[in-house]
Length: 93
Image 1 (cartoon, rainbow, N blue to C red):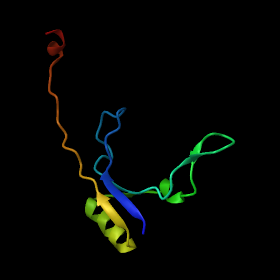
Image 2: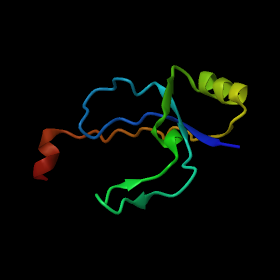
Image 3: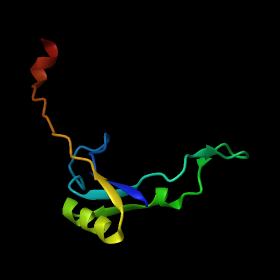
Image 4: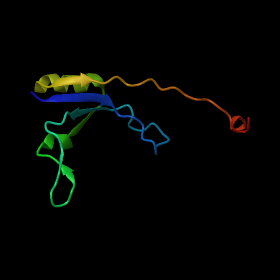
């Protein structure tokens, strides 16, 4: 039986806004380890589910899809966001 991870997309380090951070993703666990290709040296495997990432508007929709497909799943909770409020003058203290 295939297992999957359900998590909320984190904000990219290069991203200042919060676009698409409210979406949830279902990602399959790797079925086999990656190994380097003898010719190119690139890492790869025969597991094509590693390339599949499904997006959902809510966590409940992702869980419902996983249960409908008979997948074992793990919901990774969203970390709490903490703001570090400081002013420009704090740089010179």
